[in-house]
Length: 145
Image (cartoon, rainbow, N blue to C red):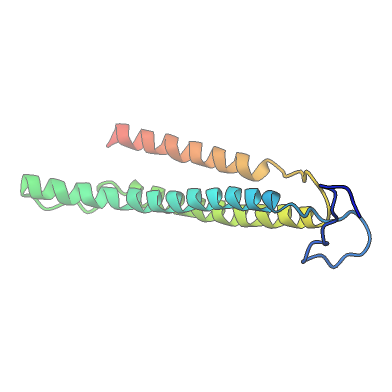
């Protein structure tokens, strides 16, 4: 009989390794990793939706202006918005793919028994730089048009 609180736990169900460190079997660790992954997914969906909004904003402004003034809309006015919107959608897709890869690497490291897997900051920093550049381009567009 074992002392209270020291009962042995069965090995992780997904483990096929018989040697090396045991996989992390605390479900809270996996649930925390999943919550983080879902936060990245929410961010990517928001970025894609924001990209769609940016792309359609110039169209809405052009139509609104033509209704208010009674003139035909200019065909080439605000041509940058669709490209900026497309760029934001691409950033959203990049965030989604990066999140999936990072989540997979993290879970695999936990299954190998690594209690605190290191993740590179390259993906997160590149996303931050891209978003800063897109934000700067949007600020310039607001000032110029």
